[in-house]
Figure 1 (cartoon, one colour):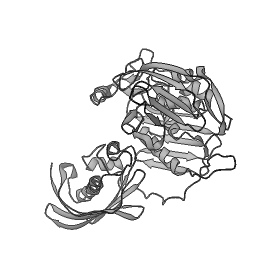
Figure 2 (cartoon, helix red, strand yellow):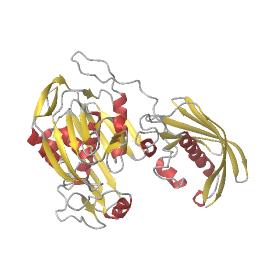
Figure 3 (cartoon, rainbow, N blue to C red):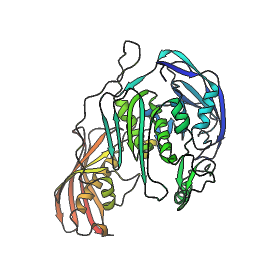
Length: 445
């Protein structure tokens, strides 16, 4: 796509089907939109036909798909539609739908690609928003790694690893062009493992899922009669998801993205990093250039990564509030990190229009870091658990918001038998955001 002008579709087009997770029937209509409208979903089934602009700040969920919402109105699983829109080079579009989830179609982006092909495209009298990566950008969380390298085009290299004999390691790398997307990426379908199905159904998900719209991987075979469309269909679908999630920015991105084991949640973290690089000054051609912000302090190496933390603490998502430990003086002091993201479950209901991390969860994060310190003092941590028995002198100094890196420092003040007293300080960018004294006891499970 060589044009530097914004685009929309030439004529309306409709696609209908059931939603993957909701199972609801949905009629979805793509409509042309004026320059600088962006991508907007309109819920025609709700009173007043509320609109939701596709924007990083409107992402309210990343569980098995990307969900956007404003004032309680939501549209879920939008990434397959957005991937087709992105690959078509469309900047402005209104998408009307009479349900809360677009059709899943066959589990890929190909039906949406073909629908947009039928609609045609037209250029608008306004420049596209573009961003060319000029310096390497690195993101790492647990076993997820994403690197962006300078490039004058968009290229994606993606690898996945699953402990399953039918998947194991898959890798693909593509320059993203309309032709490559249509041929190599758009047909790749969403996938899941047979052993996950009951758990997902119990969580209210995949109500519309079946072997016609998803790849299901059993213990020793692919359950779909047509098997795979590509030997590497799974990693190709991951590339599709990434392209859809990046479209939340609605920016023409020029970079070589190298991703390992990433998913919707970490895709959003990348989106948030990129958004912070967008500055608002006007360039000579009227487009908004994107400037690099000053480099943050390089992250310190982890003393404990998240996999090791989960061996010690019983907490799990969405209540595990420690991502890594960066300092540990056994028996005396520990420093743990929590990367606060808009995808945290609590932001959906806690001041959703003005997201602020609940103070009790800041204290909980300090408590979990303190629990790791106390567990380092016992000989058999697998047989022990930390219970907190009291809090004192709790003070909240500043709000903690999405995008902040919460650093929790815990010092052991007193230890008598199984009873311990600790002093906790939470900081963001060096500024104290919360303080507390925590009392706890290490007991047998």
